[in-house]
Structure formats: structure tokens, C-alpha cells
Image (cartoon, rainbow, N blue to C red; front, top):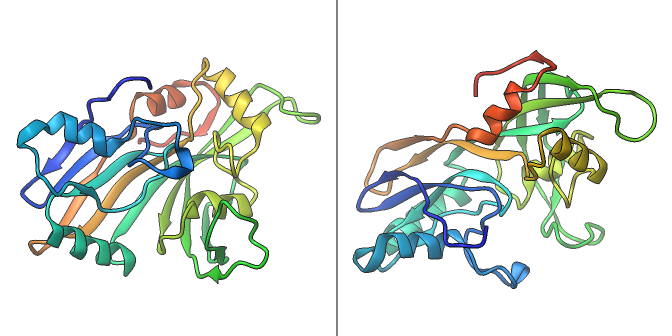
Length: 247
């Protein structure tokens, strides 16, 4: 991604703008990825032009590699109220992920997580963290990763985080020994490379923010849905699915 992308706008009013963020795009500039100039905040500002809202700001975090729903606020009051809603667990979130192996059909995982995923967890404060996982698809592809089996198993899961720790879904799936495919930090490089090759060179973090229920700053509830894009449909078109979901 070497040019400012045009972000699909899924919802907009005087308080909020919701976009479909592509995988590989930062939400905003950060010292953690200082060499990267492109980000969703600057892209949306450029897209809206001079008539755009002066107080545009992201309402929540979304990892660079994650695609899907990204909410921006356009007023300081909306930013404050929605920020509190995310912090206080008033926002219901649903993600879709491709993971290594075949997890159990339903897992409620509540292992605490260190505050900063970029640092060794030893000595850090351990924060409560809860995620509900539901397996929605299973596939077995005819390639070998490492020694042993001549085929490799993967699954699609829905993840519903009940808390909002950094990299929560990614770290919880690593703890469960079912890391997300394409996760260079918490996943398995050999599987990441093998799946990318099987999919014709598509390399990405296979995690998508698909659905949000949140309190609207003006009152009431807002329900947002963002179906996974073409890369996910290509994934489902591959042979080998024992359980194929409709994404």
C-alpha cells in the first residue's frame, strides 16, 4: 500500500463516520511504526476534503493488520462519550479469524494478559481479559508444514472480546495454541508462509472486525456490520472445507 487509499464509508452522521479499514493500514501515525506514513485518519481527512469535520478522531484501536469496522468521531463530545463506552465494555464486538488447527466448537477464555504486548510479560501487571470463541468452519489443505502430517488443518472462528486489551484476540488464541494465520508477532511463521503460498501469495493477518453494537452519542443503539472482503471469499472457494460458513 503505497498511496493514500479511498476508504469505503459504511455509515455517517453529524457525530460519527464509520469506514471499512483495509488490512495493512495504520489507524493513525504512531512511533511504534515510525517509517509508515499512510494511515486511516489522514486518508479519511484527505477524502473528506476542506469541508470535512475539524475534530475527526478514531474512537477505538484496530491493529494495522486487522481489516473491517473502524469508527471515527467528528465532535469532541462524541469522542468523549464513545471513548467511555469502549473503556467501560458497553460496545459489543464480533471478529472473524482464520486460525491454525481445529479448536473446540465453543471456548470461553479468561486468562489475564500483560498490559503491554510489545514487552516481556514477566513482571508486568496482569489485566483481566475475556474472549468468547465460536468455531464456524473447518478446513484441511493438502500441504505439509514441518515434519509429520502431509496435510494442514485450519479453522474459522468468531471472536467476541468482552474486554479491550491490546492484541487481546491474537494473544488469547496464541494461549489456546490456535494462533491467527498471518500473525507475525503471535503466530507461526511456517504456517503463515504456507497458507500465503496456498492462497497465491496473499499475505495478511487473517482477522476482520465484522460487527459492532454501540451506544450512539445522540442516544439509542447503533448496529454496524462489515462483511469480510474478497480475500475471505477467495479463502472459502478453496477446496478442503469440512464445515464452510457463510461470511
